[in-house]
Length: 428
Image 1 (cartoon, rainbow, N blue to C red):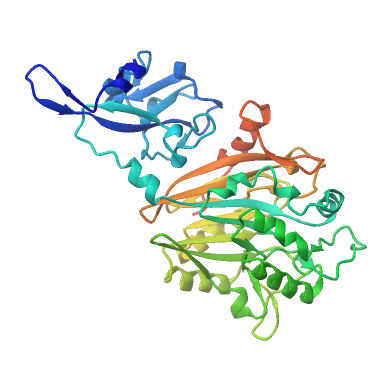
Image 2: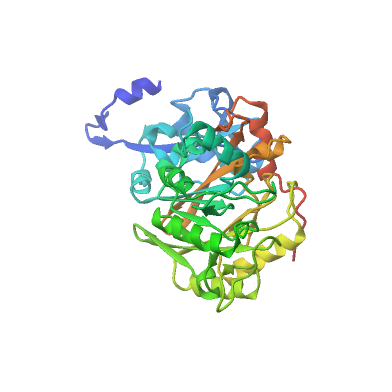
């Protein structure tokens, strides 16, 4: 049936002899956040009564539900591309998300007065992609040297960043030219040449507010900043003075100005910057002041935070209270890290918080959870967050980092760690 309709002209002559214009409508498959469905299957298609008559022509077996409240965990609901519901997540089609092009959508022709703004969306949408903990040191350093390839850790996931407008990670290991392998395995230090690998992965901006950024002393921190800037990678969360450490970095894409800040809340090898000495930006009242100032200058403010307790899926009340304070101050999206496990997400006053993206490039192979993470793409349209695409990744002992296949039993486990909010009690 879909094939037959696809051959029709956009204009046909019917009984009374006048022309009727058929328009292309764009639909997308969605599922419930708690659903265990991993692949699009037509046998599970349902839709609401508003769209049933149109979709029935193309999918004769599609079922109708009275409302989204009736959606079961075994259903895939077909809705217009711009549908939003807090309990739904979109499903890619053949690994293509809808925001990347028509092949990730269901395109139908129907007699309708509605305007399909999907093409305008594709032309004007902006994507920001974020990865979690990146440590180009210790085991990763040994791998890079063995392969003699600074790009090796990025090879199998950098495609996730290539088509994104702005890309960022939480970078946690200083890079120095006078490199000697640290005597302590707790010191995370890499070579300045490793910045080239990050550059080839199309990374635009990094948080350097992490608790290990002093592992090569203050001189190593300053050299890291200079090295990254030389590679055309912006930095946030550290600087040679307090003003620089808390400075908002602005990036313009199309008609939208994005602001970036980064803060740390974990004791480590580097202290807070002062008016006369280098250091990092701490999560404190100065952070709230910086957020308020940056919010006045940008359309969307993204804040990266190094915080929390390691090796847990559930953020503490402490992090959640700070998230609320930052949102009240003007943050639009908060992206957390430090647990080294994927953590839950939350909406606070309509703003998004990802408490922990987990590991991205690191050598923590002692548990299942420390070898897993997520890479998230935040899709903006009309200067507002439209959707979020969450991709599970896996860290292998041979140094490869790859997407987790949707057919893998761990695929849904990683996503559920992020989507599960059952342990988040009200914080007000």
